[in-house]
Length: 124
Image (cartoon, rainbow, N blue to C red; front, side, top):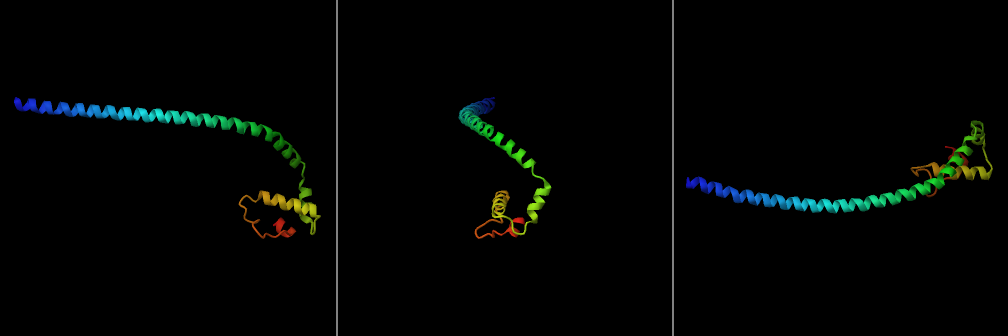
């Protein structure tokens, strides 16, 4: 029996040590969770503030967008074909369409340094 008593007494300190270690790890995780929670609250506050600013900006832009859509909806295919048919359009038309094509070229491929400003190139 003394051998059994020795074995049991050896297990107790190990399990106590394991429990203390587990408790310490839990406390560390709890502290990390508190820090993460605080960081998250700060980020959520910033997101909320940014969202409010963006919504305010959008509310001022939306009427302009509606007006632009209304203006564009009045353009007929006949008008576009007429513009395409120009061999030498008035300079105002040429420069306006060149500006529009630059804005619509999302990849910025055609309008780099030294691009051609001629009418045929704009229509292509």
